[in-house]
Length: 367
Ligand code: AGP
Image (cartoon, rainbow, N blue to C red):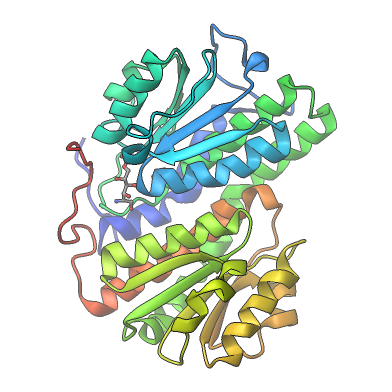
């Protein structure tokens, strides 16, 4: 079928806007709404017997894995080892037979991830694959195939594949928690409920598009941008920085908010915008105190939080972006939207080739 940009200027914008629909589509095959249960495809191994998970991926898919690590560990209490594919292959990782090796990829053809999969197979791991292209090499080589239903992703910067990966990984984490006896039917029903709410919350996030577009000129002149977050919001900071650097060519770094004082705070002055990802919750106060350290050194902050968070800490900020207040499990799905939109509008403001950024390929099939 022909794929066009519809009413959008770029595929990336179209794909950002498609997210509520494709996430709902993906969730449909992993949630049984009537039974209030998460559901996985049939598998011929015992998921309850899995004692360790090794996640391997590259780029944005790797950041989805970093977020999922929090979920597998907090919900299922299963320890997770995670690495980028190009490092994993060459470090001779300790893999006990019968472990679950989980590969995440939009294309299913990334050479480093595919080679890591084959290495894990040789080390007698069970191979699970979260992949968007159902006919890809990785899909064919999986023991447990967990498709994302994002549809073809054309923009080099991954957007909708990422949020669909998160949806699948959340369902996998809940399923694992249930078979491990760590999730009551009530808790599972609550997770199903909150995941089902994600598409509407993502629509709410999209409604801030114009505001974010208006803010792009504050970021576009910068030479460096920092992204800060804690806990599962730390990988989102890494993802925000990757999105910005790949399409706008501005140097950006994601940092764990608490790590600032160990070095990077030396970079702060009024020319370095700092994007702080801080939803309300148990980590909010801590992240805000790191944000205030930045502000005390002249740093210009863009705070992404909910109404409560912005009321508590938004005052000294250069700008704020208000997200709906959502369950922690769907925070990454919702906060991905403003992070993507910000990178997109900064790139458009700079006039770069958003869908085909220099030096990059959609699918990296060389090692
Ligand atoms: C994301 O915006 C990048 N273009 C890139 O990091 C990408 O996520 C990475 O190359 C992995 O690709 P895959 O998901 O197809 O394996």
